[in-house]
Amino acid sequence: GHGHQCGGGAGGDTLVIDSSFDLKTIDPGREYELTGQMLTKGMYETLLTFAGNDLTKPVGELATGYELSPDATTLTLPLAQGRVFSDGTPVTADDVVFSLQRLIGLKGNPSFLLDGVTVAKKDATTVVLTSAKPNPALPFILPNPALSIVNSKVVTAHGGTTDDKDAAEGYLNGASAGSGPYVLKSLDVASQAVLTRNTAYNGPDKPGYGTVVIRNVKAATQVLNVQKGDSQVALDLSGDQVTSLDTSKVTVASGASAYTIFLLLNQSPEVSAATSNPQYVSAVKKAIDYPGLLGVAGTGSVQPAGIIPSMIAGTLPAADALKPDVAGAKADLAASGMADQKPKLAYPSDLTLNGLSFQTLAEKLQSQLAAAGITVDLAPAPVATELDNYRNGKEQMGLWYWGPDFPDPSNYLAFAPGGLIGKRANWPATAAPDIDTVATTAGATVDTAQRDAAYQQFQRSLNASGPFIPLVQPPSNIVTATSVTGAAYNPIWTVDVGAIGAE
Image 1 (cartoon, rainbow, N blue to C red):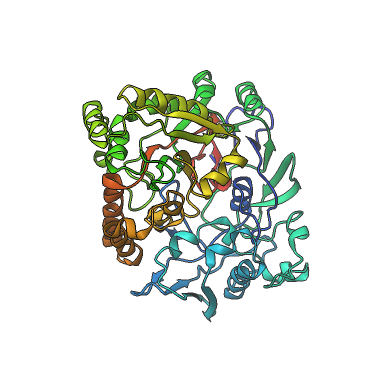
Image 2 (cartoon, rainbow, N blue to C red; image 1 turned 135 degrees about the horizontal axis):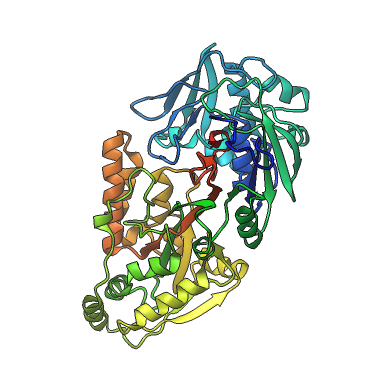
């Protein structure tokens, strides 16, 4: 049953989670790092959420559901009744309005999530969000823990406001003011956070432990701790590290993360005669041995069929993925007249994503391309240096990754001609008017089924003639003691602490 570890064991009512911190704050209106998202998710609730790791359907949490107007500018949210904060006071429409207006007014890292959105109370049990322009992504944005609902009376009493004069962060880093399954006992942003069960909690989760300790631990130590039973959950192990674990003592859940690692080919002839040549781009797409890349990325990795990863709405079926064709690559290379060119393949040499090193991946790509007669020179640089080249459109070929700001396909219009990443490839809307039209249509479509189809069409056209090559979704590995249940990976909050139980 929940909260009782069969056979007791050390600290049977305490869950210890080892994680590599990127923690700055746990003030819901200001946090936007992975560790902050996980902690906030444990102590607070949002209007809508996602069940487990299904990011395709937002479901009710503090709201019972939602209704989006046909023009996608008005989102109506009926509130769940009878829910209470940790001090026992009811969660009201006023708390919802205050919380979201505070996020907007703070102008902090997550404020962009509600750009152009106004929040109002319709009546005591209904809140309405109005967007200046059609915003079908709103229901997919609301589950973000930065949009958590706080106890407005408590936060106001501790300096909270809905503008940038807000002074409640200090208080919220020492005490929680939410309606979630746990409350904050203590926080040291450099070393650990301690949560205890919220005795007033009356929501759908069944918090399985009296105490949850989240510790800042390097991956190498995480391996040792989880094997010895010093921790029950390890969040940052690479594919290599999990293969050495004793599976009689621990459970390994390996699955694709929401990161898409991709190759960019610059479309400016001034930057590279080769990468800006359509037949050369086609040759590179066919020369890559995609299944071979999964071998480097490790257990749980998948090849994304398009730029949108596998768990997000609008993703392409696996059958649409790019396929290796060495003979075709050689023919396209010959037709391009660029076989003697040696573009530079630039990448961040010091970057490791979920245990996958960009150095290792770049070397593998170089050898795969060579097998089809395509020569590239590796051009590694530290991430700080290379990021500038990437952002300024100076890379001939670039190896990078994209993680969604929110799990909605509109986030991937960055890869449209003239989009954020399109510009980094020197690929303006005028260079691909047909793809630009498809992208514009996708962005304006509201109906769910039509919207998915429009984003699939956008990705098919990118696969056919765009300058981006989706390579791999690296794995996320969550290692747990065999006694632990419910620690499913979620790309937004990593794990939902409130859903973790013991058997």
